[in-house]
Structure formats: C-alpha cells, structure tokens
Image 1 (cartoon, helix red, strand yellow):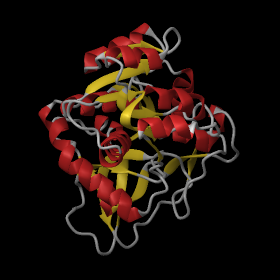
Image 2 (image 1 turned 30 degrees about the vertical axis):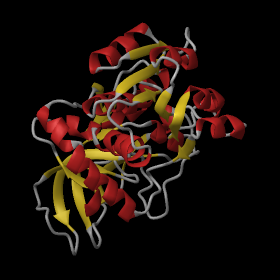
Image 3 (image 1 turned 180 degrees about the vertical axis):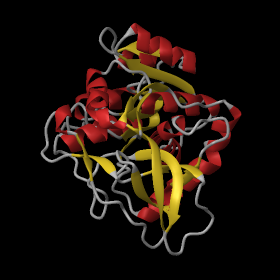
Image 4 (image 1 turned 45 degrees about the horizontal axis):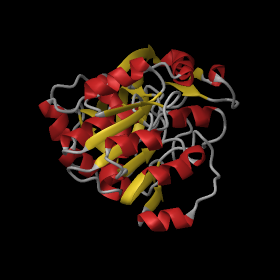
Length: 325
C-alpha cells in the first residue's frame, strides 16, 4: 500500500507519499481500507518532530479516517467485512489501509457520505469527552469555545446548542465569526479586536463562562480563569500559545474553579473505547437527525497532504480539511 511517511521532520514538504508494507490486524483489531482521513493540528506537530505517536501506534500521521472494513482480526465481533465505518486512531490515517482497535470504530451515520464521515471521529470524541464527560456542561450554562471556526470549535458550538447551552466563541475574522453564527453561536468575539474576558462578562451579565474549551494554553491561562464563572471549569486541549504560565491560585479559589488538561491520542484503549461508545450513544443520533453536522472546508488528495498542512498553517479554513484516497 501507499502511505504518507515522514523520513525527516520538517515543513509540509517533509511528507512523502511512499510504498510501505500492508498492516495486519491483530487480536481485537480490524483492517480498514481508507477512503478519507481528517487533518488535525496534532499531525502538523508530528510532522515537525514534536508529537511522536504513542508506543505501538503506526508511525504514519492521521488520527481519524473513514473507509470500509477489509479484514477482521481474531476475537472481533459485531462487525463484518464491507461495513462502512469511521474510526478514531492513534496514528496511521494518512494511508490506503490502517489497523484499528475494534472499540474505536463507529458506523457511518445515516445521511452522511463516506468521505465526509472522516471529519467526525476526532472532533466528536474530543468535544464530547472534554465538554460533557469531564467538564459536565449543562443546559442553560455558557460555553466559551476558543477557535470557534476550527473543526473542534464548529462541533463544540453545535453540541452545546443541542443540549441547551449558550455559546460564546473567539475567532480571528468576520468571515469565521459569521460561520460560527450560522452554527448557532450566541456571542461572537474577534480576538484581534476584542477582549474575550470583557465580552463574556458582558454577555452573561457579569457571571462568566461555566465551561471554557481552550486550544491556546499558556497565553490564555490567566485570562481564562478571569473569564470563568463561579464553579467554572476550564478544559485545556491544546498548547498553540505555549505550555508554561503562572496560575493565580487565589483567583481560581475565589471562583471555586477547576482547570483540567487532557489529550486523547495517548489514552489507554479502554478509555478510548468508552469515549467512542459515548459518542455513538449521544452524538450519533444528533448527527443522524441533522441537528449536528460535520463541517468540511475542502478535500485534498492524500498524496498531496503537504497542501493540506499548508492550509491548516494558514488558518484560513472553517471546519475540517480532509484527505481522500
């Protein structure tokens, strides 16, 4: 088969479409013939040499895919060869074939085509696990989602609105904020022009955000704590603004707040399977009803993955960029 390899870390041109051995499914795994794969910022970090795959995972980038089951490993039940699926991966999605633990498979939701389904696994698992399973967003509460026009952000808006929450978002242009508004965001904040702490306080009559989903990290830590409501929960899932910052514990204590930081890729298989099962139970019905939909900016041939990485680095997209085989 062919896959995107990274012979040496570097810029987008470090991605090389090369012939590699076919993977073989082991105990509890399935082999998927890939139709499409999602592009995530974690892939850019891996390409640069900053985010190696966890032990035992494929060396090829790619944290989600869609396709058809080509073979079943020993001990797999509930799936058959030919099933159309999408999958959460620890790596290997930038390839014609990938081995997936059966617990990380999802059926393609009705009403979603097979290519578009590749936009779902990573964002739904990330948002559901952080915003709902960990931070426990409730109806009537306010979610602040940084990067509202990203793949994560566009899914967070829709899921929060679906459960009856209010949503504030930050984004870097009027066009991106307009896209967030179309998805249901209530408060639109241009981070180039506005202070999100002030805007969130204004939108909530001074209360603040009950849950903040943050992809920035250190640069926003102090301001995120300021923006929290009493008993607020800050979920940090990215470090685009750095990894180290001072935390005023007095300010956090005054809010009776919580700061949580999580990653999905390195979690044990059982934890990932639990998250995927929760996504299938709670999110898939919303997708199939049309209340929540994957947002795809564009598709790029997988052999031209460098172009897709450049698109993400330019940050001009809304929603997901997909690679197609």
